[in-house]
Length: 226
Length: 173
Image (cartoon, rainbow over all chains, first blue to last red; front, top):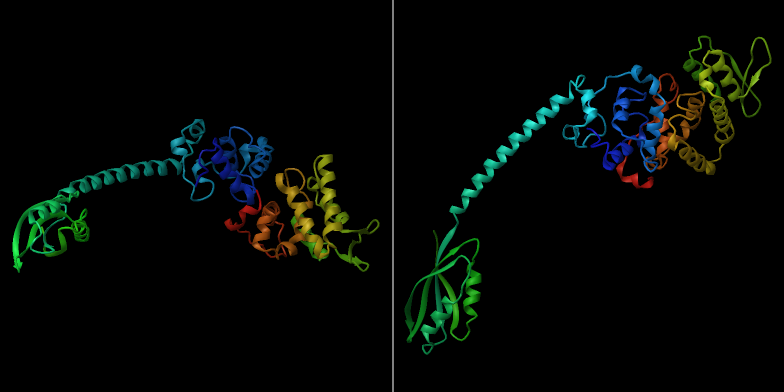
């Protein structure tokens, strides 16, 4: 509820929209509700806000009967369309002083929402702190790759060098050994540790097979989660 | 129709003894036969007479300008609305809507006899308006909703529901 800050153009626009299909702030007769909102305005609304201006001029004509209009003056935040944020607690200008004595409902709500806000913030901070600790447990895996050359003439040293030249964030190369396959051909078995979020096996395979001179194919021999 | 209006008007004005009306002519102009004096013919005339009889002359307007405006709207009602052909209705509604843009009541800042009489007159039109049209004639709808909730006005007529529909708000500024 509330119109937002009635001294700002945005608040006046909300008031204008609200009054488009209403003659009065509350109900169908002029009441203290109209007087409350009237007093919150610093001047007549501009003629572009035709509904607000109409209402303003109309309520002005009741100046003499201000005191005798029905209803009880409530905080500004109690009037207006539902769903508009109540900024009267943050607004804090002279208009609030008048309402303090009669402000039975308004002040309670405002206090509550401030408390609720504090609690929310505390909870958020605790949650974020918890989340911050998580990075210590990054998911890692140990992969054993089989890199196969074209034939027994392939320089295995060069091949290993080129494989190790693949540098990725989250990739750490480990031990390697040459395993004979047959016919004099040896395959390179090389281990590495990767962070699951950052490196994938397809990525690794692509990068290694890019060295077409040396590498015929790459296979994943073993894949273990750490 | 006019006779029912007059009886509702009497109730609104708080007149205890209802009058006996009759109609005159093809167009069924209402006629009030008073005990001492000539008969009063015509809706506007009878309505003004009733307001004075109920000792509520303020309903006819407090200042001369306001009185003139009240009479203007009574005349408007009789001439432009009561016999209104279908094509003209849109124009009439548009004119009313424009007039009511900066006014809460038809004449001045308080209810006058013109408001309920005009309300009775256009009720059958407004009841049939689509939501989109009600949005288009926003000021008229607002005034209509206001008058129909005024204590004592709406007697024999069905209340018209007024709902804002955000989809159509671009039709008016």
